[in-house]
Image (tube, rainbow, N blue to C red):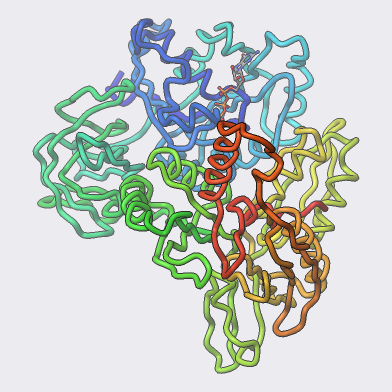
Length: 599
Ligand SMILES: Nc1nc2c(ncn2[C@@H]2O[C@H](COP(=O)(O)OP(=O)(O)OP(=O)(O)O)[C@@H](O)[C@H]2O)c(=O)[nH]1
C-alpha cells in the first residue's frame, strides 16, 4: 500500500440545515482529532456570524486520522463547503480539490434545491458519491422514501445509503468506513515537478495571508521558493501546516495532500483561487485549468448615517477586503447621502453578511441603498456600458436598448404551495420552463430577471410556502427588455438613493407601492411633504404626508421632568438613525423597506 492509498479527500454536500456541520463535528470528535474538552459545537463554522446565523460561509478544511477496520490508518481530508446559493462558487472550487463527496440528505425532508445544485457540482467534478441519510432519530424520518427520492430526482443509486443521526452519533462509524472503502484514493506522482492547486486563502491577524493548497504532483517543503503560475509572483514558504482544525506544522506535503502555507503575502487579493503553484526552479509544464473568478452580481451603495464616519467606514471596508476578495468596492458620492461606497456582492446574503459585519464589528450605522443588478446599456454610438447604479443612468436619448441579467431558477416545493409559487414567479416577470413531480413535491424551473429576485424574492418564497420551498439559481444570459429608471422625489427633491430600474409595464405599480410605503415610513414634519415616483419628467404616482406639530413633550403636562427628559432623549436617539434631505428627515430603515414588494 502506497502513501497515496492511505489518503481520502472528500467534501460534504447538502442542502442548508440538513446537518453537514453537525456531521463534520461528529467525524472530528469520533476520531479524536480534537480533544473532547476543546470541542465546540459546529467546530468548522469559525466566524461569529456564521455561528449565529447557523450558516457556513467560508469553506474550511480539517485533516482527520482514522484507524480503519483493515488495520491501516488513513488520512481523511474534509473540505467543508458552504450551502447557500450565493456561495456556489466556493462550492465549485473546493470540489476540484477532492475526489469524493458524502451527499447528506435530511431523512425527514428529502432532496431540496441546494442538494441538487451541490450534488451536480460534485458530479461535474467527477466525484464518487456516498449518500448519507441524516436525522433518522426524528419521528418524521422516512429513509426508504428518501432513498427513492434521491434515485428519482438526482438519478444516482441510493440502495446502499448510510442511515445516521449526526445528533446522536448513530451510524458515524459506518460513514468513516465508507469514506475509506467507497471513495477513491487520490492519484499523483511524487517525482514529478510540483503542481499544487490554490484552493482558498484568508487573512489571519497573526500570520497574514494563509493559503490552502492541494498538492497534485511533486512535494512542497518549508523554505521552497514557489511561483504562482497565473500571477507570476514568487514567494518563499515560511510555514507549512495541516489543519486539525488548528494549524499543526508539517515539514512537507506530498501528492494528494491538503494543507496550508504562509509566504509573506500581503493581501488575499494577491492570491487567485484556482491558480497553480509550482517550484520557481523546476516548474511543471502546464497549469491546472483555471477557475472562473467570482463575479459580483448585486450592487448597492453603503453610506454612513453620520457623515463623520466616512473614514471609519473606509477603514473597515479595507480591513474586510483583506479577507474577502469576493466583494468589490469603489467610492461613491450621492447628492443626498454624501460620501460612501458602491459595493458589489455575490448575492443578497453576501451583502447582508458584509453589512452586518461592518455594523457590528466596526460599530458603524449604515444606510444601504436599493440593491441593483448590472444592466448593460447599448448606446446609440455602439458602445456597451455597464450600469451598476441607477443614479448613473444617462439620458435616454443616447440609449438604443437595455439588457438585464436573467437567471434559471430551480424551486422545489410541496404540491399544495405550487399555485403560490407560480403566482410569485409570474408576478416577477418569470417564464416557466419546466414542471416535474417527485412524489408530492413539485420541481419547477423558471427563467427570471435577476433584478426581480435580488431584493426580497427569497423572503417571499419562504413566507408564501411557510418555509417549505427551496430555491437555487444560476445566471443564464443578458436579454433586452423595456427597462426604465424610476426616480423618487421627496418634497420635490429627487433622492438618488431610492432610484431603481424597473420594467416599464410594472413601473406604475412599483411606484405606487413605494410612495405609499414612504408615506408610512417618513414621520410627519411641520409642513406638508409630497412624495412622487417619476419616469423622466412624468410623475406616475404621488402621496402627501400632511403637516403636524411635533412637540413630543406637549402631552406631558405639569412638572414630570424626568419623563420629559426621557422623551427628548428618545427623540434624539431616533434622530441618529435619520438622514436629512433638504428640509426632510428620512429614517434609515425607509431605504430598504420602501423597496419591499408585497406581491
Ligand atoms: N434531530 C436531529 N437534528 C439534527 C441532526 N443533525 C443535525 N441536526 C440539527 O439540524 C440543524 C442544522 O444542522 P447543521 O449541521 O447546522 O446544518 P448544515 O447543513 O451544516 O447547515 P449550514 O451550515 O447552514 O449549511 C441543527 O439545528 C442541528 O442540530 C440529526 O441527526 N438529528
